[in-house]
Amino acid sequence: MRSLTTIALALALASCGGKDQPTPDTAPPPDQSREAVVDQAVADQGVPKNSGKICQSAAECAPGDECLAFFSSTKMCVSPCTPGQACSVPSAAKNASGCYLQSGSNYYCVWFCLYTGKNYECPVAGSYDCYQPKPTEPGLKICVPK
Image 1 (cartoon, rainbow, N blue to C red):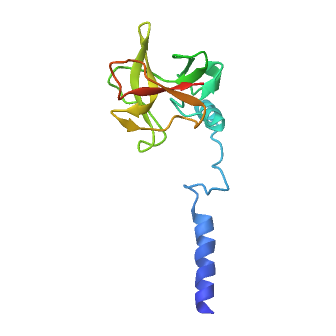
Image 2 (image 1 turned 90 degrees about the vertical axis):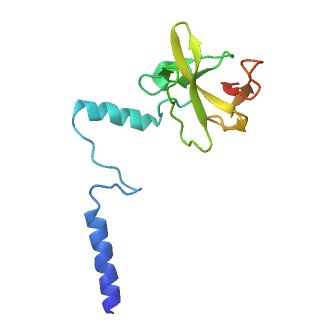
């Protein structure tokens, strides 16, 4: 009986004491500052930087990203970058992205489906083709929306 009381007390304390960490079923209370509201709106969209999401306009992408087409007429959300800069991806084990393509004087992150001879996943399986932009680089292919 004592162990059941101890377990019940521990569960009650755990459910009351987790104010700093939201549980999967609850969200933290919204911050009332203007910046937090903007950040919350981006989080509600669920669009991370350099998402590779197929888009029609930059409004569908994370703030600062652009909706551009490379090697196809279908556009995708990409981040502007500086050559040599790392580009964000959800999982470094499954995805690869780098500051690779130049448009005018700007550079953009692209997603690779083949990089240094290793295969990687595109943002959404079945929605992208693997395209080899340079015949001189057979170990490099980028994800291009269909």
